[in-house]
Amino acid sequence: MRGNILGLHHITAIPDNAKRNLDFYTDVPGLRLVKKTVNFDDPGTYHFHFGDEQGTSGTIITFFPWEGIGAGKNGAGMSTHIGYAVPEGSFGFWKERLAQHHVTTEENEIFGEKLLSFNDPDGLQLQIIISAHPDGRKPWTTRDVSQDAAIRGFHNVTLTLRSADATAKVLTDILGYSLKKQDGNRYRFATDTIDTANIVDIIEDPATPAGRNAAGTNHQIAFRVENDDILMEMNAPVTEKVYANRGHIISEDEIEQVNRIIL
Image (cartoon, rainbow, N blue to C red):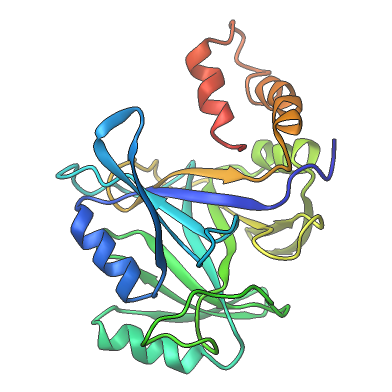
């Protein structure tokens, strides 16, 4: 079963205001509004999809803008940072562009890769990263964001956990990822089935307070598989692994929650 996962498919997050969310992602990072639908569990709420021209897997961030939900809180047990890949030489452009839009940034380096960390208007934690490996994906460009600077798609997603062990086993034993690097309490897992949008980082911090899912936090991460047959094949081991120690019969609602991690 190892090798069935083809990296990240999409990431979904929660904003507090639909128009502000739409304006920010199409203007500041210059992503394309690929599709606007509704949340099928809550048809009164939009579902925005932002990414590249074709809506390619590994480029799409989606949002459920629940108006007036209020601010959430990132914390333990959540995916806390979304990393976007940008080309070598574009760091200066992004520092200047974000400053022009009054977005505060913090410059850092993780596993030898330069990055800019910043928040969207709801507090969602984003990172623009110069990948250590060339990223040949064709980006969506705008009048203000050209080919030599435009976002290529996801680089990684970061999970913040009190203990890394259980999630690491799901990544390695079921999803086919392997541990590539470690620096203190930060672990980098990747799959070799694809060379972009293929990284999951874990920050292990036993003292991190629990988060609260609302505006400015991630709702779900979806991984990509090739077809429906593989999706169904993945369902049973994921469900068994996640609930192995629960000690009770798995409900349909719990199975649906597990299914959110694979697409």
